[in-house]
Image (tube, rainbow, N blue to C red):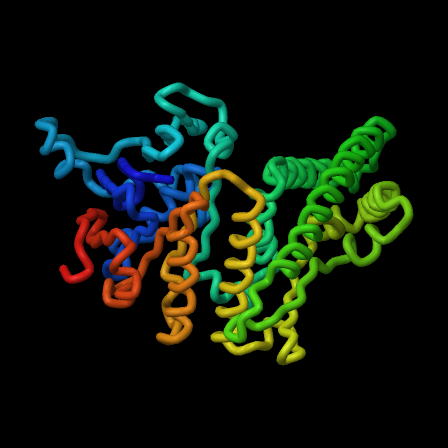
Length: 395
């Protein structure tokens, strides 16, 4: 669990330091909109997930704020901006550093564990993992299928150690296939190009089935571990798409998948997209009480359903994963009435007070008064214009 966090030159956080006491597993960030709360949570997420909760480009995360005020403190005033960002966390399992240095043609990510360079986030994930919900998650059922796949993939990345890599390689290969199709379909695919495509499509089919299978296993587990509380709507959920509904039901799904990719070459070249595969799947959720799909539920019902699903995964994983868990809840309590806010807080306090579990929860909101229920267990930090100040609940 993170005890000390230092953020340098990241978005509007020029030099932010937070220290969380050993007896507290809950951190509350409060402040006005645009003060930097989400930036801090994004920085935490980048310690454990390559793309972070915003899935933004690393270059975009570099602070564009003038450095003069910061450098004057060190006696070295200068104008302009620096070309890097860095995040350091002292945790119960070591010191982690995640950073980025911009380059003329391409940038470079840097990872360190206890001041030693490591190749990737795999070293971080051995002892830690992260989950998050954001304000935008409220609209998940009204957003694109890609956003819903990303939500399920967040769980899959925790549950299956190689899921993120499988998704990355799958997407890379589908882009490569489309480039080949675009180049050769009009002039004609030669024998050599056909062999090349056959190899790529075989890998796409293998990875696509692996990704789809992991997602289907994940949604089945969410259903199994759902919270039986009247305030969280009972749900059924599944992954839907031609891959799941037709191809994977066949006796030889891998062969069927490769055959479909072959048959769709001309179509995919024309539309400029891969029309069959894990990239076309969607996550569908059904409200059992209302007997309607989640997209047709009220905004409040959708929010409580998503919170229930999120908590269900935490409960499931707390039983089966011994790593430290960091939970980021970015303005999730917005638009929750007092009753449902207190229900959520009751689970948060339950997680944080369980001595057998290694879990920390970070929350953000516009007012510290919204978090009065957590006053005896949480550390409070006022965020203002990219700066951080620890306070008490009565401050």
